[in-house]
Image 1 (cartoon, rainbow, N blue to C red):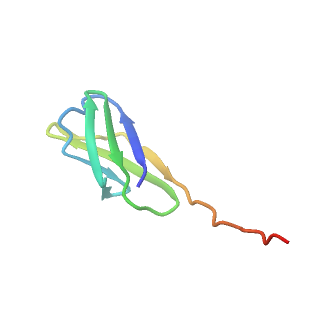
Image 2 (image 1 turned 45 degrees about the vertical axis):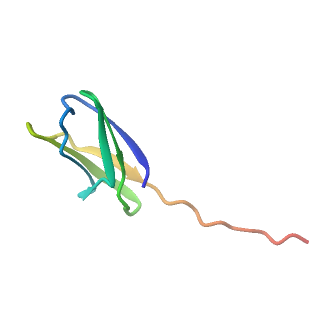
Length: 78
């Protein structure tokens, strides 16, 4: 996965972070306004980010974009 930094309010005590409905491989809260997560695998496109704490679940529809890496295209050398 990719390291993702999430900014917002009241992130202290986060119990889960979901990206595209899947739990992050790992996550940590840095401060009341910042958390990090290692994204789960996903298909190209956008995915919602949802943070849950003891006080509730985020209601903002924040999106993360998964992109594909182009396949290598080697050229033969003479």
